Length: 469
Image 1 (spheres, one colour):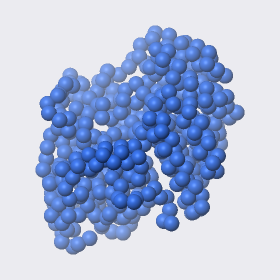
Image 2 (cartoon, helix red, strand yellow):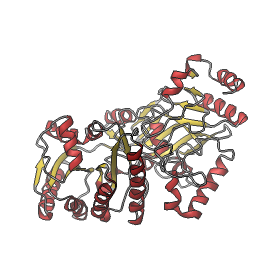
Image 3 (cartoon, rainbow, N blue to C red):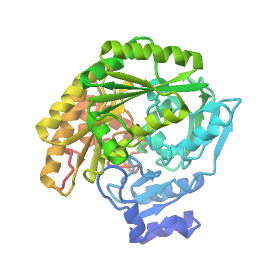
Image 4 (cartoon, rainbow, N blue to C red):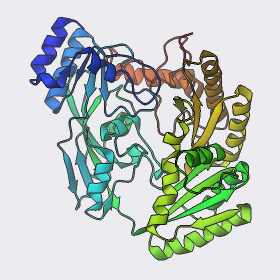
């Protein structure tokens, strides 16, 4: 990095420990939870809006790229500094987590851990519904940028559904407020919804006002076993059309179950094709009635067994299986490519069948789990990036997975975002004109392409690649 830029950054950040330039520090910010290594030139850890404004103005003056980042849990490469430049690490900015129960809002700074918001809200009998699987470590700023989801998305939606207002630093270094703290706000364009999920390409979020809701009185959990993956998919639609809206409806295929049992035996049957985990929430009497109905529906459609958790300990044990899938599957091979292709609920059985065919066609280790209740599946491919021939097959398989999802009326991403990993497929979903209109928005907000470049919009001829060949 140019010495003058570093000098100006250090004038903005009056704490040398929050400006990182040595090789080891830069290496630790060169990757996230996806794929690829891109070292930045400098890492800055701001803890105030004024500091962000100052850094953005330095970046703007020198036309240097700038990349906001939380804890680096992104599965799509969202925070990766693909063109070098300045990484803004917000993980140290945790000083604001205020619950205002009378307005049912939380006011947070971008480095606050997402699960901590829910914990704090619970003390007031409230809940912050978005619950990405990484919520115990991911920051709310990252969740806002990627519009994260989670298992409760089926009933409660994703991050954008709970954002009332934002403070945002623009590419010029100006500060704007979007939305506010009221549930209803229809003044002008909805810039709040535009910023959430824009992956740091339009502005940098420095504060958020989040909507909270009353915490449900109780929860209940069922585990349903199937000897046919297709029937399991049909059961999902039958539960929902049967008048039941679970708070969570998760699926694990046989490979996921086997991996969990080999990793940490929980006594799950491994001779099944699929397992559904269903959480109901609300009044205890309603949960009891809905659990009975869910059991009837599943058995009628062909489930081989339904187990209802009788205690909170049993409930926790059942959900432990789902939480262990990711750590379990990476024991087989070191490289995990985690996708979140999403399809309409009615096409879930068909998508399962296509994934089976793709697995066999390319001879890859493919496991499927995810938030099946809202069609948000997580096909995960386990591979070894040192095996170039295998990675070439994985590249083709991933492309075919996305094509299959789009052919069924689905989308590239239900909750992981586009980041760097899915940019080559954007035009496939949006069309030439649709992608062009999004580019025009980007150019209006960030004419010099300084904010998180290399994300969402593909370069001419860019293709999906997991190798350098």
